[in-house]
Length: 382
Figure 1 (cartoon, rainbow, N blue to C red):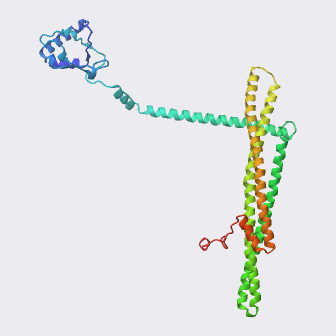
Figure 2 (cartoon, rainbow, N blue to C red; figure 1 turned 120 degrees about the horizontal axis):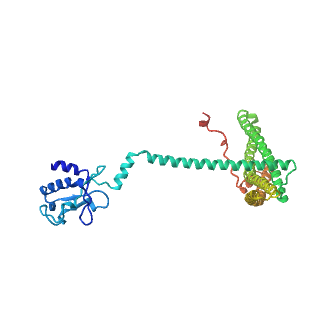
Figure 3 (cartoon, rainbow, N blue to C red; figure 1 turned 45 degrees about the vertical axis):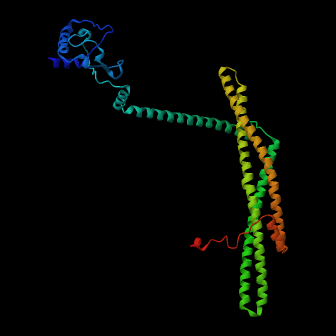
């Protein structure tokens, strides 16, 4: 009988009141009597312990019964202190789970929850990027429409444009100067090509004279004089080619890097000017229209965009002015040096003044390439 009663108690809850009493139910009298018989015939309460489960119990869920006075045969706590009530679901008293273990069990039962959260975060980020791209495309479309409208209005004479006469004149001078300097580059490059062919011809002619001086004893002196002359002309020609190449390289840097950088800033300035005039015209049109609440909101937004593009226009105009000033100073400095080099080298070469030509190269720090350095090596030819 004890085993059957204990098997029933395995799925029961034992509530304990603060004063040691329990409520009496008629249907539990028989169970209470059976429990009393088991406890009388069972072990001493002073040598056992009571294990409780659930929340709010003592640490570890173990209550030593040695703290309870009396014995099993003569206890001071009445047996009615334990009230047994059947529950609708079973509760295991000895096994108590912590919050961490229950959370782990829940995660094990729902493994897709974390993946679902990650996928949701990724979708939100992707949606935000898509919205930003859509806004940028929308702004670009509106800006392009306004600028195109302003450009056609200026070309057909229906719109006004902002003009800085002094700055526009400097820009026109720069573009004209760049075109002329590019022409100098083309002519100087052609001169190098032709003169290099002449130097190569002189070198070949000198080698031929040298060979004939060795094979013609009766004309050895004459062939020898001409061979030395051609070799000297070839040497001076290579020095002149070095000076002209240095001149072309410096002018090319001035034209295709320094001037081109300034022209790129000018292009940005012109685009900013067009945008500024487009938003200025838009603001003027809105200002001439009605002044209701919706119109005032549009006017305020147009005023904000106008101020942004005006600041951009003013900043780029200042940048262009500064770059034009420094470009002019740099151009004068570079061209003064290069034109002097070109003049001295050409004069010394055609005057036959080899010493003056060498001094010119040293003065302008022109380093000549060794003969045959432009030709590919035998390994590269293979």
